[in-house]
Image: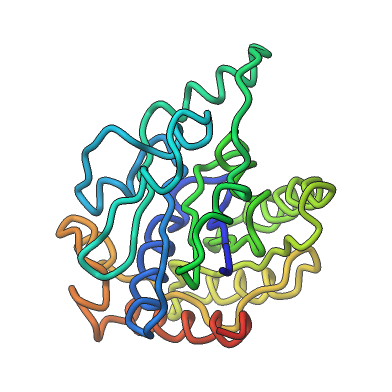
Length: 248
């Protein structure tokens, strides 16, 4: 099973949108997908309108086996939901309490019948995001074109590299999101991000589209809500690019 973390230290760059739409496109391509919500804000969990007891926090603190936290989705995939209990893991780590989180990588080895695991990470390095990266083959970094993107990308790459002592296979690649193709400043920003040397950048970019917000309100993936919108087309093409690179 290929495992990827969707992560950025910044919020508002399209992490949840990317995770959900990649999962949907891979499912459409016949892949069996496990989606994990690792963000205490639980936006991915809310998208699928799940409410329940078991969550990723309980998997990580060892109080719930991973298989018991699985929620089976109508699209054929599965979700491990998030909850505000993830904040408790962070507080325990800060205070030095002896609560030991179960390694997510070990828990995921129990699942043999999934092709891809996609982890929607929170902004910042939390106990959950560190566990996610330690379990991942790849970190996909959604990046918007703004004056702080290059510096932020370089800082995140340093933190990802620091985890290679526990996960030597981890690699990182950036996905440019919310790109305004007719804006010359945005076009220059895209070129600058492609020139930076810290993190390779996917060829496919994701165009800015109001349909993204509308689809989120309707709790529908773009391929269902607005399949011919620019963002939907771009996510479809990017999923194909990612699968080719991952040899799926």
